[in-house]
Every structure is written in C-alpha cells, then in structure tokens.
Image (cartoon, rainbow, N blue to C red; front, side, top):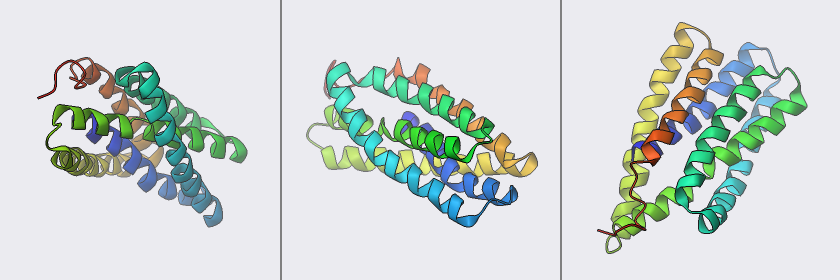
Length: 176
C-alpha cells in the first residue's frame, strides 16, 4: 500500500499542481487542459504497457523502472521552456506513472487469491487515501516555496518506492 500511496501522491500532485503552475506562468488555459488530457491519455497506454512488461519481465523491475522514469520525466518537464517538449514529457510522465498500477493490483490479487475484491479495495482505497494525504503536503510545500518546488519534491518522493520494492512479496514467492 505504501508503494501505491507514494505513486498516487505523485500522480495526484501532478494533476493538482501543474494547472496552478501553468496559470502562474500566465500560460493559456487550453494548454493547461491539453497537458492534463495528454497526461491521462498517456496514462492509459502506460497501464497497458506496464501490464505487458510485467508479464514479460516480472513486477519488480517494472515498479522500479516506473519510479525512476517518473522522477526523470518530471524533472525534465519542470526544466523545459519549450511547449512541444512539455507535451512530450508530460505524456512520458503519465505513461510511466501509470505503468505500475496494474502490476500492484496483480500483486495484491496473488497475496489474497481468495479475496481479490478485498485486495483490490485495500490497494486502491488505502493506497489512494495515502496518496491524497501526500498531495496536501506537496501542496503546502508549493505554497511555502513555489509549485515547481512542490513538484520537485514529488519527483524525489516517488523514488522512495524503490527500496520498498525489495521488501515486497509479489505473491510469486508464496501466496497467503
């Protein structure tokens, strides 16, 4: 749930703070809306790709890769001055952030094979709640400093997923 919570915090922080940042930069609303649309659409492709890659390479490399790529794309997105590059980078960010979702869901199902509905509810419910609480913290940092600083912190926090992966029982080892 901590892995889902940290990932959810980054996704929700991006969706919350990018519009604020874009408005502060006096960028047009249609660009702002376009960025969020691209983030969501690319996230769909990330879900599919993450599931496929997990079936091919296993869940742990995909979760680690998702965290590393998400942090990288976020930092590059925040540094770019080019609108075309911003759209490409937010697409890559959306895909990488969402690529671990199906992987963690399958892990939860393997851990509770007789209670898959409950496993899904725990992962989505508690993980999403933890992520939502994290958005408040990232938003507070954005208020204290700048929205960009808040998103830099989110790009760092998503990396905390990596050490957690090494303690993760993927359900392949032994189902409960």
